Image (cartoon, rainbow, N blue to C red; front, side, top):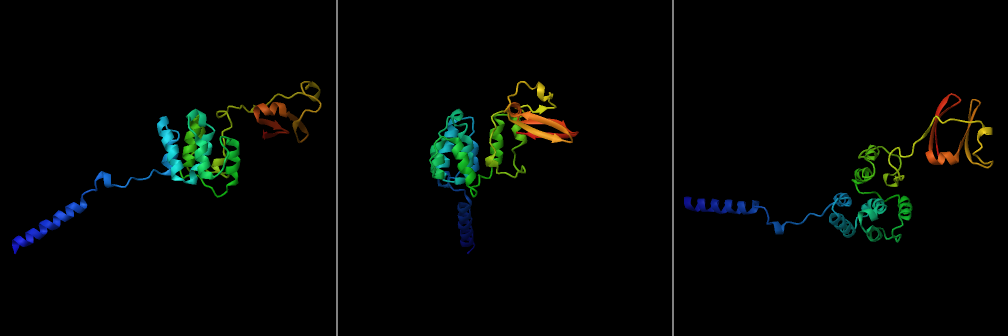
Length: 219
Protein backbone atom coordinates (compact mmCIF):
# COMPACT_ATOMS: atom_id res chain seq x y z
CA UNK A 1 0.00 0.00 0.00
CA UNK A 2 2.88 2.35 0.89
CA UNK A 3 4.60 1.68 -2.43
CA UNK A 4 1.34 2.37 -4.30
CA UNK A 5 0.93 5.72 -2.48
CA UNK A 6 4.54 6.69 -3.32
CA UNK A 7 3.93 5.79 -6.96
CA UNK A 8 0.76 7.94 -7.11
CA UNK A 9 2.61 10.92 -5.54
CA UNK A 10 5.47 10.48 -7.99
CA UNK A 11 3.07 10.52 -10.95
CA UNK A 12 1.28 13.60 -9.51
CA UNK A 13 4.46 15.63 -9.07
CA UNK A 14 5.60 14.59 -12.51
CA UNK A 15 2.37 15.93 -13.99
CA UNK A 16 2.69 19.18 -12.02
CA UNK A 17 6.25 19.60 -13.27
CA UNK A 18 5.09 19.09 -16.85
CA UNK A 19 2.28 21.63 -16.44
CA UNK A 20 4.58 24.26 -14.90
CA UNK A 21 7.29 23.95 -17.53
CA UNK A 22 7.26 26.94 -19.94
CA UNK A 23 5.94 26.23 -23.40
CA UNK A 24 8.55 25.77 -26.12
CA UNK A 25 9.54 29.03 -27.77
CA UNK A 26 8.02 27.94 -31.04
CA UNK A 27 4.67 27.39 -29.35
CA UNK A 28 4.50 30.82 -27.77
CA UNK A 29 2.21 33.27 -29.56
CA UNK A 30 4.17 36.22 -30.94
CA UNK A 31 3.01 39.43 -29.36
CA UNK A 32 1.90 42.06 -31.86
CA UNK A 33 3.79 45.35 -31.65
CA UNK A 34 1.74 48.28 -30.38
CA UNK A 35 0.94 51.34 -32.47
CA UNK A 36 3.07 53.41 -30.08
CA UNK A 37 6.13 51.22 -30.58
CA UNK A 38 5.74 51.18 -34.36
CA UNK A 39 5.26 54.95 -34.52
CA UNK A 40 8.36 55.38 -32.35
CA UNK A 41 10.33 53.25 -34.82
CA UNK A 42 9.38 55.59 -37.67
CA UNK A 43 12.21 57.90 -36.57
CA UNK A 44 14.68 55.13 -35.72
CA UNK A 45 18.26 55.81 -36.92
CA UNK A 46 18.24 52.54 -38.87
CA UNK A 47 16.42 52.93 -42.18
CA UNK A 48 15.50 49.23 -42.26
CA UNK A 49 13.72 49.58 -38.91
CA UNK A 50 11.80 52.62 -40.18
CA UNK A 51 10.70 50.80 -43.32
CA UNK A 52 9.59 47.74 -41.35
CA UNK A 53 7.60 49.89 -38.90
CA UNK A 54 5.82 51.68 -41.74
CA UNK A 55 4.92 48.38 -43.39
CA UNK A 56 3.57 46.94 -40.13
CA UNK A 57 1.45 50.02 -39.47
CA UNK A 58 -0.18 49.50 -42.84
CA UNK A 59 -0.88 45.87 -42.00
CA UNK A 60 -2.15 46.70 -38.51
CA UNK A 61 -4.85 48.96 -39.92
CA UNK A 62 -5.09 51.17 -36.82
CA UNK A 63 -6.30 54.64 -37.87
CA UNK A 64 -4.81 56.25 -34.76
CA UNK A 65 -1.45 56.15 -36.60
CA UNK A 66 -2.73 58.59 -39.26
CA UNK A 67 -1.77 61.84 -37.42
CA UNK A 68 1.81 60.62 -36.93
CA UNK A 69 2.07 59.56 -40.57
CA UNK A 70 0.82 62.96 -41.75
CA UNK A 71 3.38 64.60 -39.46
CA UNK A 72 6.07 62.40 -40.92
CA UNK A 73 5.01 63.06 -44.50
CA UNK A 74 6.57 66.53 -44.28
CA UNK A 75 9.97 64.92 -43.67
CA UNK A 76 9.35 61.87 -45.86
CA UNK A 77 12.20 62.49 -48.29
CA UNK A 78 14.77 63.00 -45.54
CA UNK A 79 13.79 59.70 -43.91
CA UNK A 80 13.61 57.88 -47.27
CA UNK A 81 10.18 56.45 -46.51
CA UNK A 82 7.14 56.06 -48.76
CA UNK A 83 4.37 57.27 -46.47
CA UNK A 84 1.50 58.13 -48.91
CA UNK A 85 0.48 54.52 -49.80
CA UNK A 86 0.12 53.62 -46.11
CA UNK A 87 -1.76 56.84 -45.38
CA UNK A 88 -4.13 56.17 -48.25
CA UNK A 89 -4.71 52.60 -47.07
CA UNK A 90 -5.59 53.69 -43.53
CA UNK A 91 -7.66 56.75 -44.44
CA UNK A 92 -9.24 55.90 -47.77
CA UNK A 93 -8.11 59.30 -49.10
CA UNK A 94 -6.00 59.97 -52.21
CA UNK A 95 -3.86 63.04 -51.57
CA UNK A 96 -0.52 61.50 -52.48
CA UNK A 97 2.39 63.46 -51.02
CA UNK A 98 0.41 66.73 -50.74
CA UNK A 99 1.12 67.36 -47.06
CA UNK A 100 -1.05 70.52 -46.87
CA UNK A 101 -4.14 68.65 -48.11
CA UNK A 102 -3.58 65.89 -45.58
CA UNK A 103 -3.35 68.48 -42.78
CA UNK A 104 -6.58 70.15 -43.92
CA UNK A 105 -8.33 66.78 -44.14
CA UNK A 106 -7.15 65.79 -40.65
CA UNK A 107 -8.50 69.05 -39.22
CA UNK A 108 -11.98 68.03 -40.37
CA UNK A 109 -11.76 64.59 -38.72
CA UNK A 110 -13.02 65.60 -35.27
CA UNK A 111 -13.34 62.00 -34.04
CA UNK A 112 -9.95 60.78 -35.22
CA UNK A 113 -7.59 60.66 -32.26
CA UNK A 114 -3.84 59.99 -32.45
CA UNK A 115 -2.10 57.04 -30.79
CA UNK A 116 -1.58 57.42 -26.99
CA UNK A 117 2.13 58.19 -27.28
CA UNK A 118 1.69 60.77 -30.04
CA UNK A 119 2.50 63.89 -27.98
CA UNK A 120 5.78 62.45 -26.66
CA UNK A 121 6.71 61.19 -30.13
CA UNK A 122 5.92 64.52 -31.80
CA UNK A 123 8.01 66.31 -29.19
CA UNK A 124 10.91 63.96 -29.94
CA UNK A 125 10.46 64.51 -33.68
CA UNK A 126 10.52 68.30 -33.32
CA UNK A 127 13.57 68.09 -31.08
CA UNK A 128 15.45 66.67 -34.07
CA UNK A 129 14.96 70.15 -35.57
CA UNK A 130 15.70 72.08 -32.38
CA UNK A 131 16.12 70.56 -28.87
CA UNK A 132 14.33 73.63 -27.47
CA UNK A 133 11.03 72.41 -28.96
CA UNK A 134 10.94 69.88 -26.14
CA UNK A 135 9.86 72.77 -23.90
CA UNK A 136 6.55 72.95 -25.74
CA UNK A 137 5.62 69.35 -26.59
CA UNK A 138 5.73 66.73 -23.83
CA UNK A 139 3.32 64.24 -22.20
CA UNK A 140 0.71 66.03 -20.10
CA UNK A 141 1.24 69.46 -21.66
CA UNK A 142 -1.86 71.64 -21.30
CA UNK A 143 -3.39 72.65 -24.60
CA UNK A 144 -6.61 74.04 -26.06
CA UNK A 145 -5.95 73.12 -29.67
CA UNK A 146 -5.40 69.60 -30.95
CA UNK A 147 -1.72 68.66 -30.75
CA UNK A 148 -1.89 67.19 -34.25
CA UNK A 149 -2.82 70.65 -35.61
CA UNK A 150 0.41 72.20 -34.30
CA UNK A 151 2.88 72.45 -37.18
CA UNK A 152 6.50 73.46 -37.44
CA UNK A 153 6.88 77.09 -38.53
CA UNK A 154 10.03 76.45 -40.54
CA UNK A 155 12.59 77.93 -38.11
CA UNK A 156 14.16 77.04 -34.78
CA UNK A 157 12.96 78.53 -31.48
CA UNK A 158 13.46 82.32 -31.54
CA UNK A 159 14.54 81.97 -35.16
CA UNK A 160 12.38 85.00 -35.98
CA UNK A 161 13.50 87.82 -33.66
CA UNK A 162 10.74 90.02 -32.28
CA UNK A 163 10.82 93.75 -32.96
CA UNK A 164 11.53 95.04 -29.45
CA UNK A 165 11.29 98.73 -28.55
CA UNK A 166 11.66 99.82 -32.18
CA UNK A 167 12.83 103.29 -33.12
CA UNK A 168 9.99 105.43 -34.47
CA UNK A 169 10.07 108.30 -36.98
CA UNK A 170 7.56 110.99 -37.87
CA UNK A 171 5.26 110.29 -40.84
CA UNK A 172 7.08 112.94 -42.88
CA UNK A 173 10.35 111.09 -42.32
CA UNK A 174 8.99 107.68 -43.39
CA UNK A 175 9.99 108.20 -47.01
CA UNK A 176 10.50 104.47 -47.49
CA UNK A 177 6.71 103.96 -47.34
CA UNK A 178 4.31 104.36 -50.26
CA UNK A 179 1.00 106.26 -49.91
CA UNK A 180 -1.01 103.03 -49.99
CA UNK A 181 1.28 101.12 -47.61
CA UNK A 182 -0.58 98.79 -45.23
CA UNK A 183 0.15 99.32 -41.53
CA UNK A 184 -1.07 98.17 -38.14
CA UNK A 185 -2.41 101.34 -36.53
CA UNK A 186 -2.61 101.89 -32.79
CA UNK A 187 -3.60 104.84 -30.60
CA UNK A 188 -3.46 104.87 -26.78
CA UNK A 189 -3.86 108.01 -24.66
CA UNK A 190 -2.95 110.29 -27.53
CA UNK A 191 0.11 108.27 -28.50
CA UNK A 192 -0.22 107.15 -32.14
CA UNK A 193 1.82 104.44 -33.86
CA UNK A 194 1.86 102.76 -37.24
CA UNK A 195 3.68 99.45 -37.76
CA UNK A 196 4.23 98.79 -41.50
CA UNK A 197 3.25 95.26 -42.48
CA UNK A 198 6.33 95.20 -44.68
CA UNK A 199 8.43 95.33 -41.50
CA UNK A 200 6.11 93.15 -39.41
CA UNK A 201 6.42 90.43 -42.08
CA UNK A 202 10.03 89.97 -40.99
CA UNK A 203 9.46 89.98 -37.23
CA UNK A 204 5.84 88.80 -36.78
CA UNK A 205 5.84 90.25 -33.26
CA UNK A 206 6.62 93.66 -31.79
CA UNK A 207 7.14 94.55 -28.14
CA UNK A 208 6.58 98.21 -27.49
CA UNK A 209 5.24 100.80 -25.03
CA UNK A 210 2.42 102.98 -26.36
CA UNK A 211 0.76 105.65 -24.22
CA UNK A 212 2.64 104.30 -21.23
CA UNK A 213 1.18 100.84 -21.78
CA UNK A 214 3.52 97.86 -22.44
CA UNK A 215 2.08 95.67 -25.17
CA UNK A 216 2.83 92.92 -27.64
CA UNK A 217 1.64 93.16 -31.25
CA UNK A 218 1.42 89.91 -33.23
CA UNK A 219 1.01 89.60 -36.97
